[in-house]
Image (cartoon, rainbow, N blue to C red; front, side):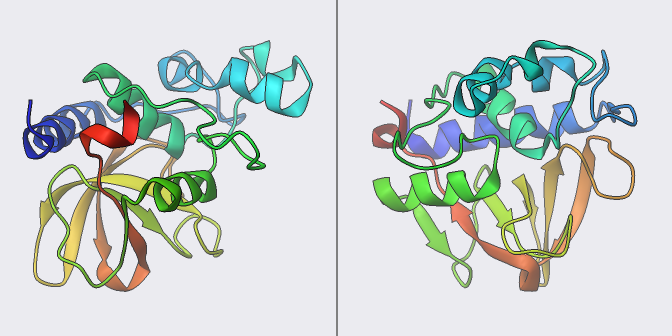
Amino acid sequence: MSCKYLRKKLSIFALNEAQKNLRGNDNFAGPQIEPYLSVFRDAMNKNASTNEYSDLKVGYPWCCAFVYYCCLKIGISIPQKPVSNYRYTLAAVPAWKNWAENVGIYYKKGIIPGLGDIALFNNVYCDKPLDHIGIVVEINDSYIISAEGNNKSNNQSGLYQRKYEVIDGYVRINKTSFT
């Protein structure tokens, strides 16, 4: 399977998943989004030396979990903590950038994105750098449409228009990035 086909497959899966408009509860948890949250619960427990995340009533901001879940579902298997000496797991946006830079698949904003690229955003969720993430499903002249989980305004999956100004860069999955 070519890398371009794999990213297109990721884009299509993410589009369909986002359109389910699944919502978390006030604790960023709940049965609708547990399939996303579950992908990082063990890794977060291990990374934080706790068992807090084993409690299904305990949630966390889940935009990265949504992206990781979509990757897993189409056969992209990335270690949950691909850079062992880095502070975070891929449950945090900075870890995606760190990993992608380490394996040479991070592209700064300014390039033309492709379908299935993973967009890293600044100042979108909590007004900080690298605070949100989504999967590119449509490209326009002045914005992209991104499939995302845990949108700031409604703690819900969906499709969102993002101007290029808020994009830090893109992770462009290729065969060598996860094998």
